[in-house]
Length: 477
Image (cartoon, rainbow, N blue to C red; front, side, top):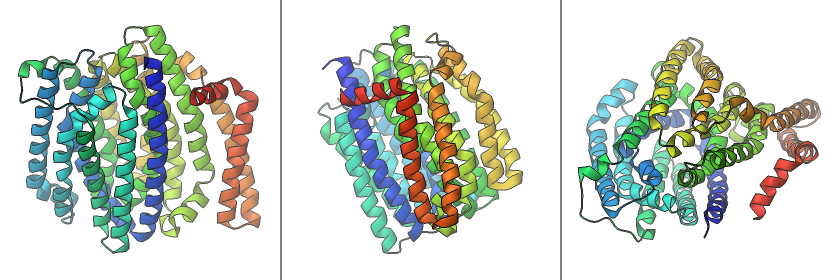
């Protein structure tokens, strides 16, 4: 199979899997939001901040280094596996020991058993991180997609069943753990390559510069991206964090399901052509344009119907989330086309640049979050949006130097996408205003969504037909 065919196949399977996963996850979220309390989601969010942060230390950029490495030896593969497993075990034991101190920081003693149970995920991940990296390097996304979709289904069934049986927060805990265990087990089973009883620091040193800078960025970036969660939990309480978490998860949908899907496939592909700037640049622009065709209308549409959407889908107890969506959805729009720049640093092997930029923006975000606390969760959300707007241009200009791409050319390439999305936004807003006067909010929401979809597709085929045809042709091929 050629490189192009492998990429198309990878995108096809990864997209199909993500659609299936997110359909399951979103349906599960709706059900759990009605069965559980905002406090349960807030407490779980606090636990996942800790789990995610420790998980960054567990990987240390080793998996990405294996993907970026053009010639992967058995010795390097084995050495990275044993190091990943050792780090996973250490992280599991460390979290078990320090969980009381973490819970004390949050003023939530109920976090102790939750964190200790979730620490098992590090053992599972340590056993399979290298296997997953090798599958991605070989562009075997069909296998990966099937595994992740099955694990999502099993986790969803577990979470819903436990919620119905009144297990509260433990429904979310076991849902997460079942997913990690299932994915890790199946990655190990499906990959025929096995590590040897071999470990050499010399092999680890060969990828040190790449992995160390990537790990440094990931650790710093994770702390910064979750500083808002930590501060809200510490100073505003679990209920406010629950509202913020739900709005944030809705904002992340284009990042997790559109941007992440495409960048996951494109990273190993672009790593293979890392020395061909023209080809790299052309593929990158097509990648981001495709993302914007989906993320722009999704986020602007969410803003237009946010009030009806929250009440109909999640219930009246989540009404405070509406205002947060109005702030965070535009942020999701920006992030959907900003985040892919990370694969330029990685594919080009310049994670040192990425780490330095992350350090600069990290300081700005933390200061902004701290100031925003004065106005509650609304202030924190606004601070998040403002800093993203300020750092948007330099955050693109720096990595674009590596592929000789100008920011103006990048932005101009999808000007029609944003104009058409804004036109759809205005149309939906006007119709919703009229519909709300004569119909119930459920009927108004359904009709508004349909109008938005029809308007966006119609305007796109009228004024942006070239890019729409490109996407459809890619799907067809």
